[in-house]
Image (tube, rainbow, N blue to C red; front, side):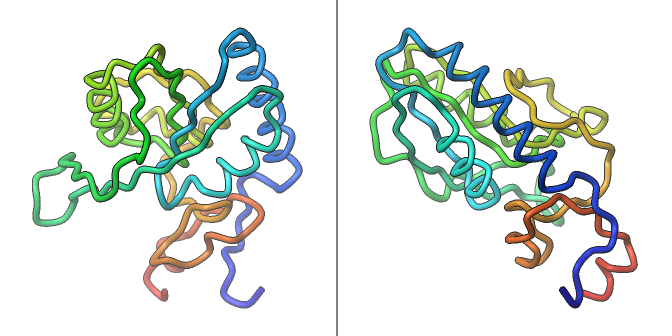
Length: 180
């Protein structure tokens, strides 16, 4: 594909294997509950959430939440709610599904927001984690892959709204970021 990132970090097969492993573990952990309520954080999680959900062996329901993180020119780490879930999560078993956890600010915000709503249980799942960049220590119950502090795209992750549909995770170089 012209203009695609050249350095693949995690191939398509490795992603599919890991998603299946996570789904098996989540299915086992939630085998005794009536239904798992999965909340995907838009937009990056949608591909991961779809594949993960299809691989689960337990009843589940899916909803989405959208947030905006402030960076340049605003208070670093500030998170704003753009779109909330449509279902009351009180006494539901909730699994937050993220594409990537890097600073931890977004997940920290979500955990505080959802805990106040009194779910029966609340856990987190992320495809990627940059453990070395965490500014806020948040629990991540299910981790697909730990990665270095590099800009990643593909499998839902983007740069300037490009590369989300790649079937693998790739690293963008600073040169590639500047030309896009």
